[in-house]
Image (cartoon, rainbow, N blue to C red; front, top):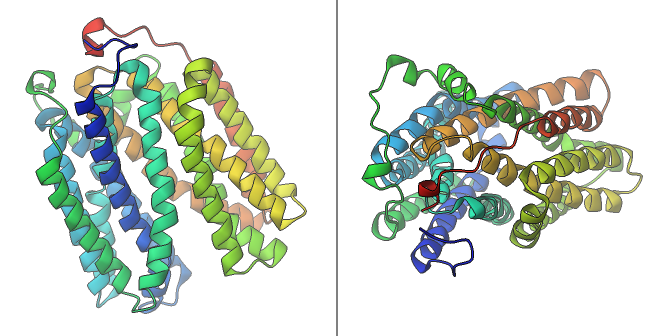
Length: 407
């Protein structure tokens, strides 16, 4: 059993490094498509709805499959599920890049969504190799991978997009295949056989809604999942309209939008590397989560009222920093409420809830932006975040885990 004060285990540190690299490569592949995906869709349809359909199909596939992949990881181990998911991503990218019709590229994104359980599985992998007192710090690796991937990926997508619109998708497929090869030869299994779930499968286990409901019945977990859903709704709504808002309010051009997004990614990387590991243990997960949700809401209000574009860049960096605390904090609080044999299922359920909000957030934001006022997703999102913070403040503290779970 590892003691909190003991020096880091080299094998676990190597595993964390490998899983971080796996996540980074995966996120870079996804982000490579960002600069060219709308233009590819417009080759086959002039409708803006079809552009959003690409995101919705991906999120829908992720919603349906993530809980099942999570259960498979609990039963058969993280490594085979992770490799299957990465290979599925490669196939999805390849189909999307080759294209030929609108139906084909939508099929490619559907395959990508169905096999998008790799990030949830990677998060469960982190939980497997982390002591309970290390989880918040180690879960911050997910945010760091996202921030770096969202900086490097779009830049490479824009670069390869100069060759052809299809090239970034083909490069993404190549990255996924490389990721699978490296994972096969270098990544070990994190879940030993004695800790795997042996309960028989039931037909209801294939229903993501019932899986979410069943997980939500665990003490204190329904409230945390609802807090995560509210946070994701507000965050996705504000993020999906941020670029449009500064273009319309400040007549921002492409490089100014890119600069804002890149500064946000840098802020996330710095916060996850230096602030989260130091502040969360001092404040405790619940207080850190409440403060970050309230802080994010206040920053959204500031973004709405900001009179200068430079101030918007600064506020966007603050928002990214606040957001960086929320995922590792909520993930840690949730992980403390399930057994080790259910960790993959929990991460799959969390991914499914997030994918639902990936659809609902942009849809609600687009409606209120068009029919209430420009920038409405910011101040409405602040109200949603205030509700989420209040609910989190009312949550109970999970009991200390059994000593055998710390090993």
